[in-house]
Length: 235
Image (spheres, rainbow, N blue to C red):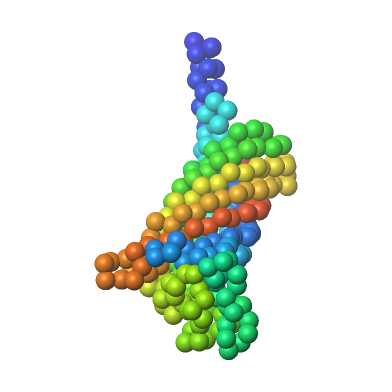
């Protein structure tokens, strides 16, 4: 009986650990347009609050639920090129045409967080995945040419409707997943370094047959550093 109870305890050990903290990182984003808009990565920042509740250690897997409330600046940056991949020069300014849209969001990801390694002191490897929800706070256009004066004659990609269209759907949703490493230090806290990918399932513009774009969803790559400190800890 004693060995049976001991085996059960090792398979699933209850935890009641609550940690909170802050996070910050860098986002490379774009928008998946159909018809296609040629782009390069749009760089932006993210920062916010983090929470993690650890509920169980199952075999060697530490099982948690994690959530964040973040500010994020994402969007798209157009790569305006000729058919031979040279910058398109604007006739009025004499400059290579440049355009980007900055979109400021509140984002709320909710993750299943699975970790392996040293639980109390040392390094862990972790994987997390779950839904993410966002709401657009505002947007800003950064461009060095007037839309009416754009050089369409030399452009290899003629899709320009997005340049003058405000975002129609402020609510965003999709799936996020990340991999990373965590360093736990007793009486100091937890330091997490993570790479994350987000794929939007919603579109920023209407996608009916009468709308211009059939698809206009977000795609983000995030590098993030998080600090957590323990509020409740299993004895």
